[in-house]
Length: 364
Image (tube, rainbow, N blue to C red):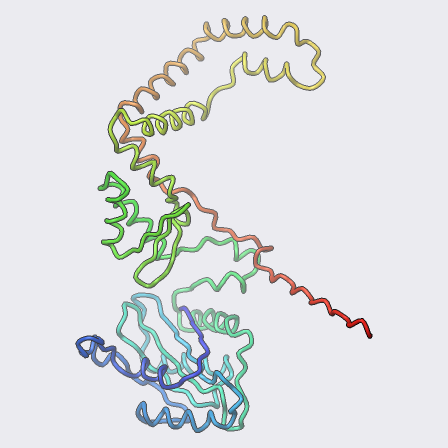
């Protein structure tokens, strides 16, 4: 379960969104009828107009408070459902944990998305004129969600990294948005051959593409994700597209040469000549005069070594096969780069605020 909490100024807009149907502005037609169901009232009752009047009357008890609206969204995982009585228990426990169980609030169940979720609109001002504190709200709602997951046997979700222990911060996370973007980029690169075609195909999937020193994508929910965050940086995308160009392309030949050199360097057995050179140039070794002669002898020895000759033949075969069949290299490059999931504990610490220097006047 995921909990989202916001503090606002106006009850009118919040209640209108939670209780009324979504309407297309141009045609004035409801997008989905009966999407909202009120499952619980506390210290209030009635229609949107009546609720707004009741909330504002109590709000007037503390006119100095600029943001009296407390809006909480509790979202279950896709496919999870709870009966009405358990949803009511979920809201009551939330009110106790957040400290507004004696204040006005209304709970609304929405059915307009793929996942079931509940909206709670509460008045931070109570009948005793006291205000519900908004201190450590994110930490409180995260702890509440973890407790409800165990109580109602819901799918467990990791809390924000800031509120986790050092060990829990090391656990990998799965971001559905990033996984979807990564799959879309992979499928698009398989069908297009030039960058303009790639950008046009990504826009047709609903992404905004911004290209500068790097590349980033903005989805339909206005979430901005860098290409490097999903393993497809701008340079990687350009490499894949360059391999699909004509065989005589200079850029294509450079990429093939780079990757063939990487392959030949991996798992290369250390022969006698390289071992001799490395030992000869160690600090304190005085036998530098005979390096050239020893090296030439070692080269002749390695040429006669069957294992060395077999490795050289295998190396030449891999180079030729990669140059003839660039498709294998494309599939190799299209594998997303591994991204570091761990976040340094030092980065999560708040930096201390610098104290301003007090400038004293000359007369003091």
